[in-house]
Amino acid sequence: MNQSPPPARREDTIGRDVDPSTLSDDTIRRTVILLQQTQALARVGGWELDCRANQLFWTEETYRIHETPPGFVPDVQQGIHFYAPEWVPVIAKAVERCVTVGEPFDLEMELVTYTKRRLWVRATGLAHVEDGKVVRIFGAFQDIDDQKRRELELKEKIAIIEQQRSTIHSMSAPIIQVWDGVLALPVVGQLDEARAAEITERLLQTVVSLGAAQVILDLTGVETVDDATADHLLRIIRATTLLGAQSIITGVRPAVAQTLVALGADLTTTTVRSNLREAIKAAMKSPSAARPQR
Image (tube, rainbow, N blue to C red; front, side, top):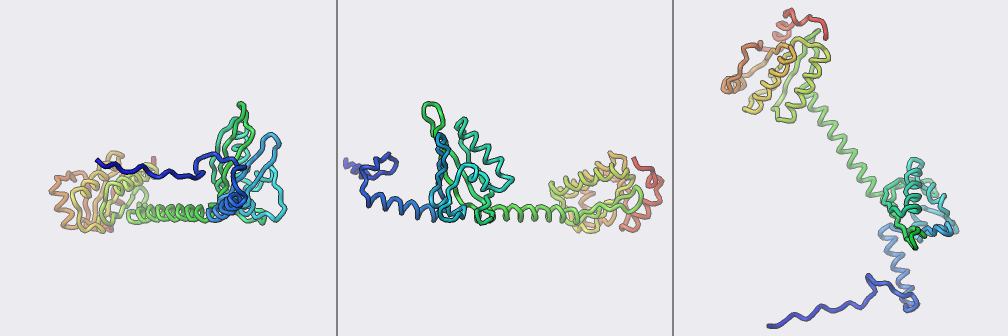
């Protein structure tokens, strides 16, 4: 049986420690240029802190991200205070923990550059330990401003959408106090499980907070209902009854009435009126409508 030849062995330095003295000047030059180009493309720089000499070293890309002028020599405190004021305690604590106990860090923070421009960066740090003591820490420093701002913008848009959705839900079933002790709940469209639960919760809270004695459930905006929607409506009625409020149903269309009858809904304790105007008049005439608030 023929066997496939073994894969060719790569004769390069990837993943292996290399003695710089074995490299030619041309190889070193090409490596440095490639590293600089790669850093610029990825907007990633490097940094190193010599803990014994308390000296900070930046790569060329790190200087570029900080927008420092030629000849600028950073120290540890300057490096920390390049961050926005609200982030200074965070990075200071992270560096201190890395130096003292060797705890690595990976943080996304806002930086204030030498030219006073704010931008988001990602800073990582890793400790190098010798004889049980941290002698230096080093890490990467990346400009993530574009992607971070897109991320924040997306979160903001999602928050706006959620707020609008909540507002639409509230508007599609607003709870209106039409008289002392009388609430009206116009329902428009179908009720799914989530929307019914949200409406029920708001309604019960309002009944309790206002001490309502009458709750008008206006179904004028509901043309048809399926079994699930009808069941949700009945649950709302039963819940308000348990709180001591009388339910009044109005605006029931023929299709809705047929579904409620088919479900065997017991509405003997529920007042039914043809329209909202008649329901409000009936509620206002009820002695319980004028009861004092709880």
